[in-house]
Length: 102
Image (tube, helix red, strand yellow):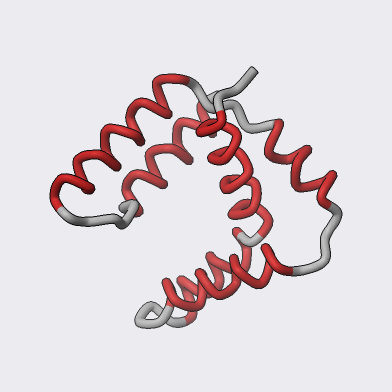
């Protein structure tokens, strides 16, 4: 049974996956406003009427290893100690690459 942290991360990755094409398009079209547009699109997808079963099914297909969770927790704690609460794109990229390897 996955931990609560893993379950939340699986759900977040599934949500990002549903908006991935729109996020990529926003990154290509307007680099200056890409993060804001991408975030807005993720919110729109999250708030849209969609079958919850499909989103949960997508989340269940994502394996999150204890090592991946430990890595992200270490990164988050280091940022908390430094006064930053932002997850870096490099962390998301690392996790995505790890997901593709499994």
